[in-house]
Length: 374
View (cartoon, helix red, strand yellow):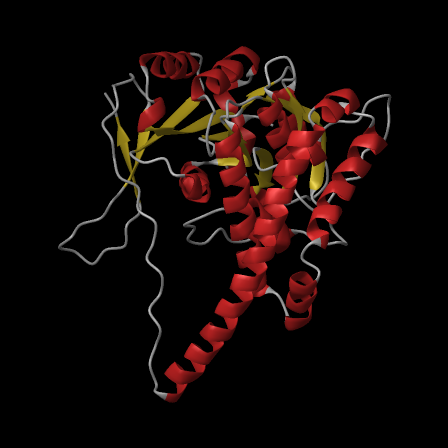
């Protein structure tokens, strides 16, 4: 599809690549460098990069400037904070700045492999999918045992199959490598956060699984210590269980609370099945099994606690709703996410989309404003 054809369908680009920081241990320089090596069709490609202050460097600016010089549209979103809980907010900022027909979310703990760009371009002709997942392979030569355990916890289900074995797509997507087909989304709406689990539940079901792009690979590697890895699993597991409990029915809540320890067996069983069925990275998985098991256990127990707390909060919230209804009061809405603004070195012709932190003396809702650096 050419740029002219895209414009007739309301999209300025074939592909928007939305680059965001990950929770920890990633490198925007490595990811942007891999895009520079493997990207093509620059005129119909848009790159949106969310740059935290901790990763803002001359090297990164140089790589982005080279991508721009080759004809791609480049949008930079500087942020002045980098907290693990802000990942969904960064995705929303990048998505609102994107103008592509296919929007691919990719995090800085990954680098793209050869053929990645063509695979996502071709995916637009693979049925009327709304949400899709790419595949993830470990950089086993550089990973520590802790990093390997984290990899299998997060992305073990998204590894490719070996020996020409078939992949059976699951009702989930890889958090660091997934995509949205904007042609199939009727209305984007106002977005403050984008979570892959929420979007799968919204746009997919057991009768309509996400499309898995088996030709799009990223290689994953990150630096992380054991204490940080455990705390990350605990935080994520608790938040996931708590969020699921708030939206679940009473029968499912009771099942998850009373059968909580079974989450460990379920998680390990699913991972074992996928790895054995696909014959992928079996030896690497075996050597990292003690770390993987420990991290899955931390996640599972934290998820169990999240289900318990979320259920209790739901009871309290329902009682509070009944009170406010009786008293004709309206509960306050949660505050919106605001990202601060950092100064960035100038890159000729690069668009900087700056999160507007709002004004203390005005009532306007914070949003996005564009600024072109001369």
